[in-house]
Amino acid sequence: MTADPASGAPGAPQFLVRPDGSVAGDDGASGALAAALPYTGRLARRMGELAGVGDLRLVEAFGTDHLTVGVTWTPAGEGTYRAALAPLAPRTVPTFTVVGAVDPAAAVIHCLGRLDAVEGVSWSAVVTVDARVIGIQAEQQDLDRLAEVGNRMLAILRSLEDQHGSGFVRLGFEEGALLGASLGRHALVAAIDGADDEALTAMIDEVRAILADQDLSAVASHREPEVAPVVEAPPEVPPVAPAPLVGARFGGAAPRKERGSRRFGR
Image (cartoon, rainbow, N blue to C red; front, side, top):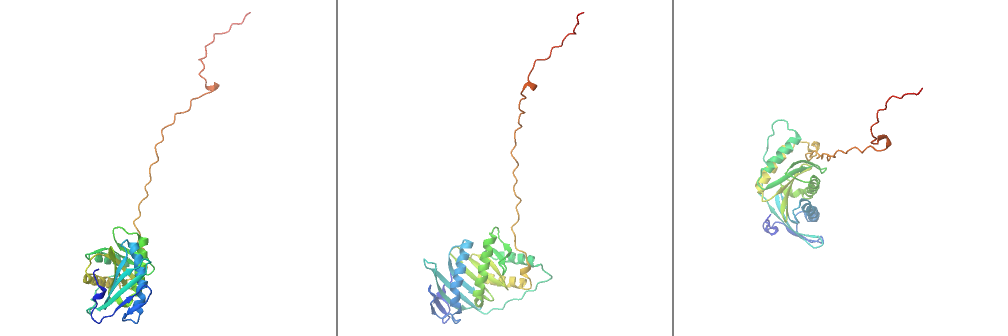
């Protein structure tokens, strides 16, 4: 997250997008890239709030070029974007052979486990085009918030599609960074801290290869394990003594005396 937008290669496009939408410089894409940045910035800023990592400070996209965008905000919440493009060395995307039939849900979990092994990755998830979380590698996450983060990342990936087609997007915030990579119509999202770019690129290549032939739309949404409700035992009720018997019927009358035999007079 130390990339400097002014460090682009000599002659590479550098441009500025002001809060009022005016552009200074050449974005190398006939204005399309400059027009996409305010939209991307608004989406990403809300992602920082949802993920609890503060305000957006940097946008990077890795593809055939390396796009670096520094972001500052006015008190009114309008962004200024200072961008530079630098060419990346050509690379050959490796091929992977997946042996045997693989269940799509199991393939997703396998891929997230592989990504989790990269140093600097703290959590990861796969979010579908209809904003469903179908896999997650994390100790604890709010699934509703994560679904919205993934949905916004999908929109950012679409808006910067030409810049990250074979790579990924990294959003730098005050207190962390989020990664996004397209999986066809779906997205891989991860929280990263100091992860190596080459290690991330290699792992994303592998994940894409494994999931390329999987129908991720058919994978069920992830659900948190259900916790059995705690049922408290009812409080013990002390036995109630029976009410005393009252009334003439139950009065404590003296025992009846035994009478002698009657004698009739003559």
